[in-house]
Structures are given as C-alpha cells and as structure tokens.
Length: 322
Image (cartoon, rainbow, N blue to C red; front, top):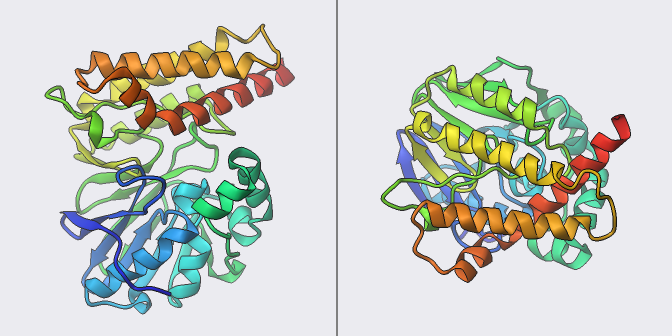
C-alpha cells in the first residue's frame, strides 16, 4: 500500500484537514486529531482514500500504531467507507460509531448494495472501493454525550439525526469546535465571497428528517462552538452567523419536495432535481458568487443529484406513514 501522503494542512491546534480525493480536490475531507503522539481520525473518506491517510501519519513522524480512534460521523461512503480498511491498518484503534451505524460496519453488505444502487456498480468500485468489515470486538457503540480521551484531549460524541438517523458529531473541547460530518451542511471553498462561506443542506438518501435536523442544529449551537469542521469542506468559523442560512436551506429543500408530494410518478424526481438545481444556483448567485450559472451547476452536480434522490425517498417514506 502506497504511503504517499494525501494533501493536508494543519488548521488548528492538533487538527489536520486531509483531502480524501473523492471526485475532485475540495469536495470531501477527513480530519486527523493529534494529542501528544496519539491520533484520532474523524471521518475516513472511502476505502480508496486510506493509503493517502496513512501517508499523512508517516509524514508527521508517527505510525498506524499511534491511532487510538477511528470515528466516522456516519456510515455514508464519503465519511465511513474507508473505516474498515483504515482499522485493518491501525492495530490499536477502536472504531467509535453511532448505535444505528454499527451493524453496517460489522457487515457492510447492505451498505454496499444500497450504495451500488445509488451510484452504479462501476462507479462504486472506481470511486469508493470495497468495504472491509470491522471486527465487532473493536467497535465502541457511542451514546449521546459519551466522551473519549485522546492523551488528555477530550472528544465528545453528540447524537445529531436529521441528515441521517445514524449521524453523530464530535465536539473537541480543546478547540471548542465540532466535527460535523454533514449536520452543519456543505460549504465548498469555491463559493466563498466577501459575505463569507455559503452553506446548503445535503438531503442525501435515505433518512432526511428536516425537523430532527433543525433540532440537532439547536443542540450543536447550545455549545457556543467557535468553529465547525465540515467534511464538505474544511473549517468554517463564527457558526452563529451561518446557522440560520443552513436552517433556511433545510426548510427550502423540504418545501421543494413537499410541492411535489401529490404528484407521484416516474418523472417526479426529475422535476425535483431541476428545482434543486435552480435553488442552489440562485443561492450561490445571491451570495455573490461570480462564477457562471453553468460553472456553479457543474460544481454542484453531484449534490444536486443526491439531494433530489434523497428528497424523493423522503416523499415516499412520508406517503407510507400517512
């Protein structure tokens, strides 16, 4: 396995942002937290990302034996797809995971099947790689409020459903920041303007729950965090100035779906996708992004597709329980 390091930078005291290489630079990160000579990964990227992650450890003068924790915020492939491969390379690590995500780490066959259905078999193999099971005895089921000691640095697991029902965020008491996975939204650096970062909600399949998500944001903000470390992408500061825009995005995307709730049919998802694309492009433009509409839509093409799929799944789920 190659040890060439992934592109990375130190962004805070003992916090490194690592590029996972999914699709394009700047789309998906993961984080390495260091305290003395002990390490914790928060999110992992896909299995294909792992060699670069191990290369960063070597670049820092440490070894995989120094990794104490691997903590996917949730099991979506861009966050936890590489967890099993990374755990196999880090013999002393424990995998910390949400209770509803543990079974997918022990036996990833359903996750593989579901993800293949979303991405297609060839694209799944090319972009993500095979999922490696994690032995059950190496897994720690994290309950809301559980804390984990990293050589004196406290990491706290906070249950945050909404984007997914198996999602947790990690609060780092040293930086007073949260590793937010997808709970604090997506904010690509290409869309930064004089107005600051632009955030929007990822309504990826299959467990979008807008009400739970809004509650989770309240839960995070009760900590008065100083920064949010986003998987997509990097650190954003002054989250108190950003959270209302994210709340608006959650509600707006739900409303796009609800407008189609009574129009079930083969082309409903296509209509939702068109509406999501228009909403996101308009949002970026209103934020002062100078890129052309086509360039904005291209950068957001994957998110547009996945958001539309997730909203369609949400409508179908709502229809079943009505």
